[in-house]
Image 1: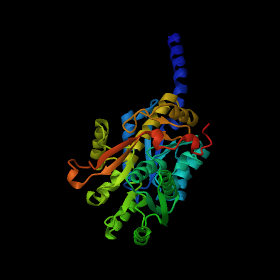
Image 2: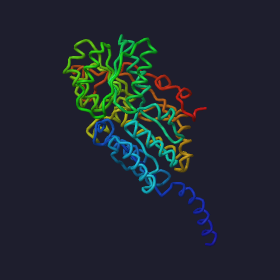
Image 3: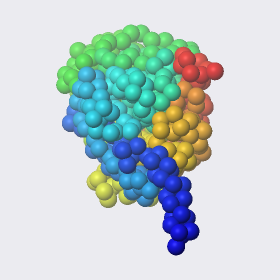
Image 4: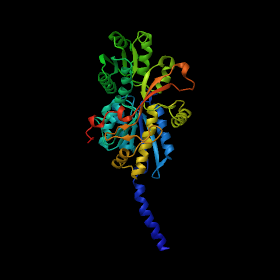
Length: 399
């Protein structure tokens, strides 16, 4: 009997430290994004559901401890996002914050996460600063960024003859980054930029901005904005007869959610770049149909990348045997990303996921045979071509 008790005690001693490697007895993931504004369909509640799907597919537990997903609306305001993130970290035992639509928000939360030694994973924001001058040892960037969008959509349109550009740019970090990256690609390929104009986030009247683009004489008017801003700009451009006059519109950040919201009649023919399309492979189609059944909408790249990011984070915790930040971050860098979003993709030293991106063209209404099947895939751009060379990113972590 004594020998049995001693054996049981020894076993308890061996198992207790492993169990204690999960802080607070659970892993808690926060999805922080726009749930009521111009980017509500771009990410919003659909990203929250994608995160929950990842947790369920993982089994609901990691290292025998429960996984919890919480969410909040940052209203596209960096100060609100920072306050929520600080409260989550300081008082609500949140271990990691993800999604982070809006570049100003993502930059603020990434800085706070680095200060608190917490992992953040961005899927909804675009600025390359996140893996450039503002990179963090605990910061990761999935889905897309302004460099990939510029290489995809910008590069394709220049090669098709659109060699002079005028930009309508959202007046914050994301817009500036998208304009700068696309202008760089345009010039690199021999094109010119005739000018640009900044517009407030969530404006409803694009008339003066579009008229400036129209009078510029540029072959392409580049929309360096996203969400409802892009939809409204395209609708109002039609009212001014801009495309009928021979100019092209470049929707530099446009996803399946916005195509659906705008409608095929208005969106047909648009060239765009996404890193995920639900009807590309049997695996992506199965995932898309699961999301559709759950949310009433097919996933775009933000939703699929959020699923992937949560799954990769949980796999890294399992591989590290702990949720301690340094160990998990090391595993996230070390392990390939292999799931419905990316196949065998690598995470670079600066936290950038180097996954493939796809150049798409929106189908004409008569070409569509299945609900939500809106794209023709024109080209696959390998991740190491789509994204900036980490050594040239300006990230001080890159050796």
